[in-house]
Image (cartoon, rainbow, N blue to C red; front, side, top):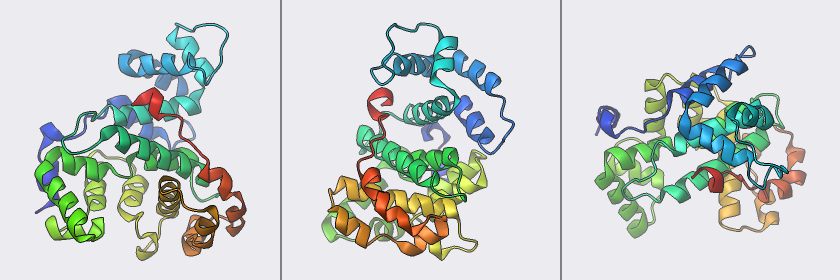
Length: 275
């Protein structure tokens, strides 16, 4: 099977709002026009409603209700606005997918995104906004597979369940490529920044690529922490098996091990507001 077989099924591809694509394109720019972004957000009814919902949630604890989009955007701030637009844009692109628990899928993605941002704030090599975006879309190839070829996606799940092989091995056997490869191809087709598509393709084995990507290393470590939270691993075991070479590639001080209790308690806080 060829990756283009998935990409050519345009009617089944995730429908990501244009404002999300435009916003991601500006993340690398120090001269992003925030006023213009806010104006575009105000014209998108779905995202505007989510902005109002977030500002009026208990998380903000305001003493009055806010009904103006302009005021809500000011209160929210540009950083949280970026987070909300990206997360809601992608989660809204596919809410009912055959064979995939989308609520669980996006909860996992938002958790990885929050952990990736937490890690990126501790290295000069990776931008925190870009790390968050990478986390939201790190598993986009798997979503694409379920949308375009649900029967093949189910066959892979069956193979994993019956033989206990890794997902990578199952995908290579059934598809001839991995969903990380498919994710990169989709992001390249959408003309997303190369750093993002490379990280999505490389995050499972960031040390195996040349040149190596610090962003893929951050994403790899975020996934490691996410799995540790999901499986309720003992913090001592988590710290003992921290992938130190991955930390080095990410540019993160090894002393971060002393801070991992904070990361292991981190919650995205996005799933109830967005999914």
